[in-house]
Every structure is written in structure tokens, then in C-alpha cells.
Length: 432
Ligand code: AMP
Ligand code: GLY
Image 1 (cartoon, protein in one colour):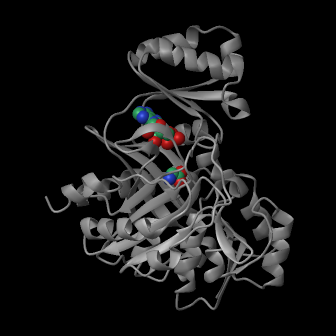
Image 2 (image 1 turned 45 degrees about the horizontal axis):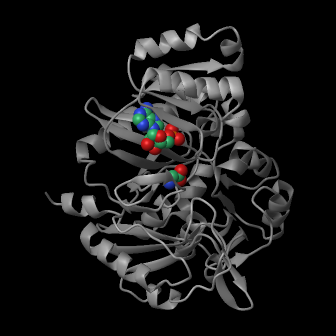
């Protein structure tokens, strides 16, 4: 099988790396890729938002399957266009990608399908112009802290968790009255604030059948102990000890299966990966959001655990013909530590030479995935906020964690930063 991976970050490196080891895969092409991906795939200089360029490339390379990494091209209809030109795509149509692209759409679907989620209501600019009373009375109904979310894609910047009703009202005013979330916030979802540990569930689906891939947890804040501003993700690990077998089964049945069935019933079959962001509340798991693609950096912690070769499964999902929904994971753990540029997620400089990548990769169980790197005169340099994702597998989270941190310690560049507590609590919890 010949595969084209679309994207150029750590997630796509992990996908390309795992697909390259797949026994049914003969060739992996990536667009645009990055210097790390270039070690496992042929990188082509076509951007992820250049749909015509990608379709041309897929046809020229006679690929059997396109695997799309980021959400933006999916929401913009890349899968539809690719399929119309006769190329199979792992990733949902634009209509189905609304599960991520519109929180209001996702909320409505969950309500109809009885998928457990926070109580919520959606408000538009027009609602707001007619007066704040609708918003205020819904906030009174919630009667406490509330979360205000931009309806559309806001690159992780469209959520305000407000401690008080007034704080929430202010966030709504900012979004609907003053455009604080930009166009993504022309409508907002207001929901009750939930409490509990957050986990991410991943499953493959062909639109009918659901093949669970497992659970991961990512570290979103820049600082240890979840302090400081939000980032794209500073680390991840899998499995998640707080997800026991009965919780996992509940998430499969009540969240993943119901969501996929509801999409099919609505005439919008969802094919690709379902990524559910969940909170494990006292009343059971509840959905915070859906994503229509793999997580970054969760994928860097999931791919090294896959025992089942994924390519045939991904192709079957693309074709609506998933027969075998068993996915075997190695009975191991994986921990991913992101090494970032100093200053990230704020201003940061790039272009620094990265040392120690070989030493890092030679640590037992470790793999270095490139998140934001570039090649300059034969050297690998920093080219983004998140620079590399260092993953390591082990017989336990504790072992994987030790190896990942040992490997990460070899990666050197000016101003480098990483969190020191990725999977620390989980490693203590496991086996207890
Ligand atoms: P989202 O983009 O919907 O995943 O929201 C981003 C982050 O905001 C989540 O990872 C949570 O930490 C937080 N969040 C979102 N919804 C809620 C909620 N209903 N209650 C508490 N925290 C939330
Ligand atoms: N790690 C969060 C995300 O991929 O959205």
C-alpha cells in the first residue's frame, strides 16, 4: 500500500513512522513533512491547505490512501475533494468534520443521541443584539461557574472557564458583542463547568463500526502542576490509569458508539478518527469536545503502542468497510515529553541548532518525533514553539517516563524548555 500523510508536525511524524513499519505499506509520502518525517517518508513541498496540490500529488504518486493529520483541511473539505477525484481518504468529510468545527453542532448531536455532556445552550450575535436576558437567565439556571466556548475553530483559544456568573456574562459580551473570539465566536456555547480528570479517547470508525484505539492524557499548560497559559500540548501518556475497564466500556458504548450512530442516522456518516475530550466526573464520563483528527501530542504516545498494523484498518475506514474492529496494543505504556522553545507559548526565537537527537533516539524504547524543526545547511534547527516530542515505551508508565526524560535530556538547543511532571501522577497511580 502507498500512503500520503498530510501535515508536518509531531503527530504526522508519529503517523508516518508507524505506517512505515506497517507490513502492508510499501511507500510513505508526506506533504509537506519535516526533517524528522524525512527519515521515514519522502517529503513533498505541498502545503496542507493546498487542496489541488495535494490531489495532484496523490494521483501522481498513485497512493492508495491519504491520511490527513490536521483538522483545518478536513473542515475545509479536503476529504470530499480527494474522494471526488478517486482517492481514498482517512478523515471525515467537511459535513462530518463539523463534529469538531462547530461546537453547537456537536452539542445538538449529543443531546439527540443521549451522549453524556455538560448542560449547555447556544447563543448567536443576533440573540445578543436582542438583549442579554436570554444569556443571563441561562447563566442563572446554571447557577455557578460556567464555560463559554466559541462555536467555530479557534486554534485552542476559544474557551473561557469563568468562576462566576458575572465572569461568564462578561466573556459572552466580549465574544458576541465585541468579537473577542473573532469569526469563530459569532456564536457561543455556554455550558456548566464540570470537574474531574480529563482524558482523551481515540477510536477509528468507518461510519458504522467503532474500533477503540485507547486513551491518553495530555498536559495543556506550559508549567508544571498545570500552571501558566495553555499550549498546543506539552506532553502526553497512554494508557491512563484513572480509566478502568468499566469506564472504558462506558465511553465506548455511551460516547463513541452513540456518536457514530447518530452521525449515520443524520445522513452524515463519520469516517476517520473520533477523538473525544472527556472529563471523568462523579456522574461518569462526560464529553467536553470532539476532534475530527488525531491529537497532538497524544498520537506520539499512541502510535508506539500499536501492535496491530494500522494501514489496512485506516483504508477500511476510508472505504466504509471496517470488518475487523480489534486493535491490539502492546501491553506497555508510552510517555511523550515535548521539548519547546524558551518563551513558548508567547514570543520565542527559532533557528537554533538542535544537538543530541541521535543520543536521545538511542535511549532504550525512545523515539524522537519532530514537531517544529527545519533543515538548514544540513543541520536540524528549531522552527516552532514545540520543537520535538520525545516518546518512550516501557513496561510501565514509570519506566516509560524515566526513559522519555532521559532521552529528552539529550536534546539540546538554546533556551530549551520542557515540563518535568509529565505522567508523574499517573506513574504513581498505576498498579494501585
Ligand atoms: P475544549 O476546547 O472544549 O476542549 O476546551 C478546552 C479546555 O477547557 C478543556 O480541555 C478543559 O480543560 C476546559 N473545559 C472545557 N469545557 C469545560 C467544562 N464544561 N468544564 C470545565 N472545564 C472545561
Ligand atoms: N492535544 C490536544 C489536541 O490535539 O487537540
